[in-house]
Image (tube, rainbow, N blue to C red):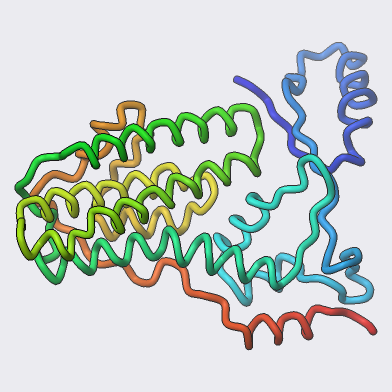
Length: 273
């Protein structure tokens, strides 16, 4: 078992020198840390967080206004790994709206709603994959392997970037395949495209769980599957949901943050002036 500690950079000297020396000096067989992942500081909108001045949003307040996954995504995708990071409400809004809502949430919504309108709430049968699908699977495999490598190297921010790129590949495939157009001339080919896309939703739910576990669980529940196996064999992973498998169109996975909300939160958490 690998024992990893995550901490702020100011705690590194104690956890790499003083504390291990204390453990060794005790003469007891305590497990010592194998890897320490430290982070730089997270600042707040041009300054520092301050509980005494009410400057900044803290966890109890944060969960009152947005679900945990929104915060998880922003904090991990902007992790202060190589330098200090700065939280701004504009950045949070852009990250939630453009990453979570417009990319992952949009993909899940478009695929499931289109399938319901043309084939019902069931994975459609028919059609065979072509070069476009083979290229997509190859690109996905490459990006997922990159994602895994970044996670194993504890490069959280880069891992988030690789994950988002994997989501983007799905949207790009939808735009190019255009099953809504294909359906008019070749319904079986459209069925294949939708079947693959539905399986991609399950794939995205699985690989996204380290970053957005609640949304991942919601998507798996909508797809009516408990198969959360990690995609070692991508071809197999993209055929977990067979033709005839029933699903439900999920509730809105991620809602967008409005300008009015952002402005209200900026004012509410600005602290003493």
